[in-house]
Length: 127
Image (cartoon, rainbow, N blue to C red):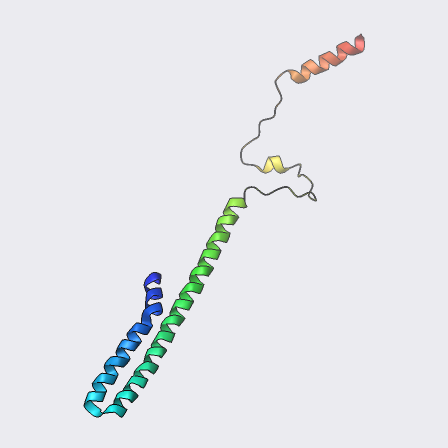
């Protein structure tokens, strides 16, 4: 639809010239030269008004499609970067952040390793 509107606006001058020639010829034959010229001028004015209206519709369609593409691009960019926000150097880490998550995090502690470390420390103190 947008493409068709562009073509009509771009080549509407051909339609206007054709209608001017037709109206001038028909009215010249029926009512004389003066009426033919007046009919041609009126047809030119009406054609330019119609062309202006079509141009205004095309201009509005271009603006609305540009705004739509811009909003779509911003929305896509927001969805792309929403999960990868870099940490701010001014914010302090929240100690309760791990409790707010839905799934529990696994700690990297191997069972028995704490006990083994305590025993190792006691052995070193004895020695």
